[in-house]
Each structure stands twice: as structure tokens, then as C-alpha cells.
Image 1 (cartoon, protein in one colour):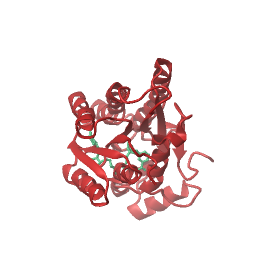
Image 2 (cartoon, helix red, strand yellow):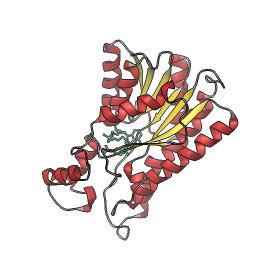
Image 3 (cartoon, helix red, strand yellow):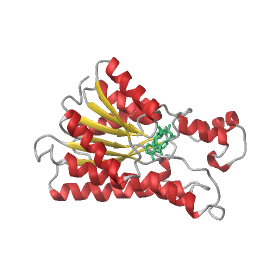
Length: 268
Ligand code: NAD
């Protein structure tokens, strides 16, 4: 317990799925958490749940593609909790799958905007703020960017998502080196989940778009499970626990690396 005592964290996309689980796990370990999301009802419910469990949390409606709203989000952390040490760039979307020949430029740009531009904005404003509250040899900061197994390996019909998540992977390394070279005590790492049983995956199963195959949700789920040698889909807290490790000082010698939490998906 209390692996994040004294730390202030900001988690985007915190209304549901991996973001909600992460906000709760970080708060349980002592962090004061700013939860942000487009979904106000869900985000407020997560902040309330944290408060009811004895933790400290605030919610702000934030669209992660809007730079002014990033400025407001990091300011909320400072105004409400006096600092920012941990940023989890989690908010994202899974676009409808389809061959590149059929994709529109508008849908491509939307995926890149939400899944990649948002991480650029988060790193930019996160570092500008976190560096004020960290020091070499003293308190450390940590940025965790949600990539995916699809930031490591290709998947047909997912050119936009592959491009965005691959971009997150390498941008993470660039930014990690910038922080190290500048002497900031801010580590930057990416997390690469396999298929996790969140609303995002449930929606994709219902749309019948996962892996580009036209079968029903139950059959699709079984096909997906077979891609994970461990024999099941992941659960949100299994990703949150990896994020907790990266957020805490237990991972103090890790920066610019990719933490794969995928039930063996990319191992075969
Ligand atoms: P989810 O759809 O269940 O939740 C995502 C949250 O992000 C939602 O609450 C949504 O409202 C919010 N969001 C979406 N667009 C936003 C925007 N523009 N501004 C602010 N908030 C926004 O998704 P999840 O499964 O929990 O995924 C979280 C992250 O993990 C995403 O980046 C996703 O790409 C990544 N990921 C998920 C899986 C998986 O299998 N679930 C696998 C690999 C990577």
C-alpha cells in the first residue's frame, strides 16, 4: 500500500475501462488523482468512488485533442493538489476496421488526432508542469503512454490504429531521451496491452470488426482469446497494475521502454 504517497497524478480517459481502473489503483496507493474524460457522468462517478474509498480525486471534462484543455487540466492538478508528478496518457479510440483502400482521409486523421496527437499534447504540457515539482536526485516524475500490441505488430484493416500506436511507441522513446538529456527526473515509458475486456473491446466485438472478420460477437471473442497464449482476454486492473509500477519509484531505472502486458500475444 501507499506506493504513491505524496504524488499527484493525471489520468486521461478515466471514465471507464483501463483509465478508470488506473485512476482507482493509483488513488488506492496514495496518489491524488485528476481524472479527465469526455464522459462527465462516468468520470465523476470514478472520482466519487475514489473519494468514498478514502482517496482524493477531482474530475475535469477534457477533450485530449484540444491544447487549451490540456493547459486547464495540468493547472487543475496544480490548483487543487499543489503539483503534478504522474501523467497517464490513456484516452483513445478504436476506429472501425477496414482496408486502407476504403479508408477516408477524415477517419484516418481522426484516429491520429485522438490516439497520437493527444499523446504529443499530453507529453508537452505534462513535462512543462511535472518538471516544476521534480528534481535530479529528488522527487521523480513519470509519464506513461498507452500504446498497444498494435504499436508493436501489424494487423490487417488497422492501418490507422497501427500508425497511431506505433507512433506513440517511438515518440515515447524520443521524449524519454529529451527528459534524460535535459536532466529532468521524469521517466517516460509506453504500455502495450493485448486485448483487454473493456467497453472499447466490447464495442469492437459488437461491431464485428476485430481482426477484420465478419462473425458474431461470441465467436469473435473466442477467436480473440485464441490469439492470447494465456487463454483469455486481459482485465483492466492487469494493465493498471503495470501502470502503477511505472508510476512508482520501483521502476526508477526504467525510461524509454515498452512494457508489454498481452498474455503472450506478441510472443509466438
Ligand atoms: P475505452 O473505450 O473502454 O475507454 C476509453 C476512454 O477514453 C472513454 O472513457 C472515452 O470517453 C475516453 N475518450 C475517448 N476519446 C476521448 C477524447 N478525445 N478526450 C478525452 N477522453 C476521450 O478504452 P480502453 O479499452 O480502456 O482503452 C484505453 C487505452 O488503452 C486506449 O488508448 C486504447 O487504445 C488502449 N488499448 C486498449 C486495449 C484494449 O484491448 N482495451 C488494447 C491496447 C491498447
